[in-house]
Image (cartoon, rainbow, N blue to C red; front, side, top):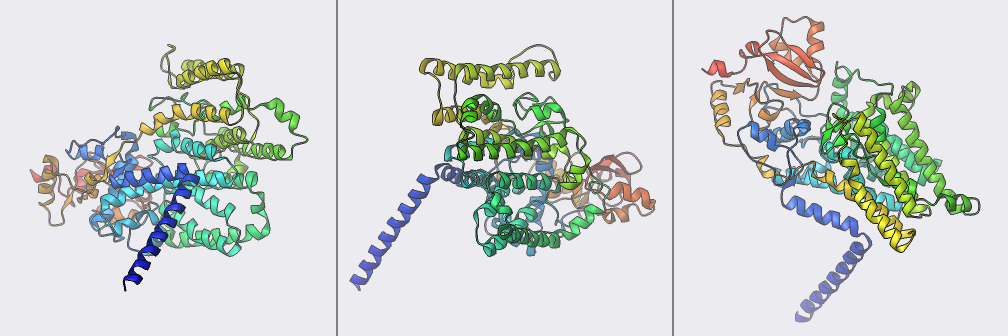
Length: 615
């Protein structure tokens, strides 16, 4: 018996040693990815998120602040819509009908909430809601999205032939880009995208490829179905495959890939068919279509000249900082000045590998040029041919910016480099010129002040001194200098979103305001209240049957009983839309803006308690 136990212990020790050795090899071979996973585990263990929900708590009388950073009011579609809907799903015990809502609307929508229906199989980010506390599960939702984007892009770029260093830095630059951070970090649409491309370029077996896509595509779409984001991302995927894996378009690879995507889309359509039908028949956003040409030249230029269209986290173009944000990095411009074009020309004819790298860069550049031209000019055929008409121009800047970043990364990774003081001075001159023009054209005053776009110059001046002292640099050292120079200014955007403890999100605050709301709700048997001071889905998120709400999936019938005598055409025009529902003192309901409607508080007081009725 002792011999048996001793043998078992020795076998267990040997197994542990082999496992430790494999883990160490994995970490040593993928240090960036391993660091990301470790940070994600720490992030979730601390119950953190990037939510600005502290602003909702403040409206409820709770003075809670984020653990780090500042909650952003501009992110109201997160802190007053998405996060409260997650709360509502928890409060409804994950049932599809929102029984805690004044409207009893469905929670099945383009937001992949944790719901007890068959779609849960394709919602990996919300499965923990059924296993652990809501606070821990919601932290996982945020942490997993960030980690999957960072790891996914790094692994994908390494698979496409990028060096480990360039892949890691490029992944970090994408994640830290103003566009990603200004939209509260990557949601499922951005975090799962690199994994879909990775499956296409890496899996050789036709059956496995089709099966993997049949599962991954609906997981991608059902977790967050944002239609305007799909056509530009599909174009980005095609461009990547054309540039780095053209064999994907051979029939033996293309047919199973298309079959898997087709099955995945069929699953998506089956699950979201009620949502699609509601949106297609809606006034907003169902009729939205664009022909191109709606993006300003400055927003395009900002992808080459970071900081020109924003000052800190303030927008200088577009209605707000989220709309002004792009994938803005210094990598493309640095690559232009760092590549040794003389050596490229000299070796192009005789070096097949160099010709292949130039071809790859050319495809990325051509794809960027086509998308950018459509952004600047109304090229109607492209709207139909590539589906871009479904995507407002501002929603395509992630794809165009990623193409431009990958073009720069490809050049510094694959082409010969030569960093000299003269080349770096040329780069600095372009930066200063961009600053001068932006200061005169975009800034509120013509006063020349040190602004965000100049933050890269101290690094460049330091590199110029280094090069003057030690001579021109090339190869890996030049590559590292470029990447660090681009990354350091980009880190500032990491502070855009706060670090918010999720435990306070799923705990109803006990404040003077919530106690008043409790007393108001108690005046009616159904607990319905009509309070205009707290907008969107915040009140429903903490459990109130509130008239103020957000109807994510358009359904005008939800309002029929409140306005039975209204003419059908007017009724449909007002209520058949994605709608933030507010209250007004005016006697009739009306559309405030495309996604905001106002209901007369006098009418709604018949169906819900108001502060006036409680007096």
